Length: 302
Image (tube, rainbow, N blue to C red; front, side, top):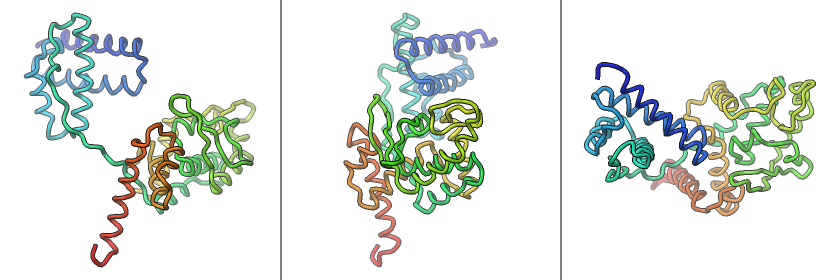
């Protein structure tokens, strides 16, 4: 393959596939980005082996996954295979290929991964990192306190509206997945910092602009998930926390710490907004692992 034309054709085919998935299925930007990343990685490998997307067979796929087996986890390989299955089904349905090379491919076993959970001391360090002598620091402290007190998803936090927060009753009404509403108590610390932020800092940030969002930026607009994620990582560095963070870090901590302190699973399910109890049960495994670790560390026969 001496020129880039076949590769350009591959990327054009990927664009057409992604456009089709977006139009027909309304897939999220994150899902489409994941598809594109997996397909780009595959195209690069094919190009090195002088192949293109429409010239792939089952043996070629097996060689690809074997070549990446050492550095890719089973979960990564399973996601890549899922992407390729979706792509080649699309290609077959649109008569771009005559045979689906993924038809007999079986995804590797991935086992359920347990979320990494911060200790209560680590949470305290993270939440205490913002400088509450500034307007932005008051906002960020209120956001972290609220996230840990409620277990909200980050998207739920940044989309929280003033009409959803009842400081007098101490609750917020959250609209979660599937447009389902749930009432979540805010807790004393969260309420205290929310009151400080709303009374002292939010008006300064808002200026002469208008917004119904609880948490806003200097521009008077609602905080984005990406901006909050950047802030979270920055505060982790300030707090000296050498841990892997995710946007759900405080949500995981909220659930696990509740269970560690005796909350029942059904209550945690309701607070998290999980429609299925089985989704919440992963946190019981995290709590159990913590208990076993403490037993091994401190029990004379551990």
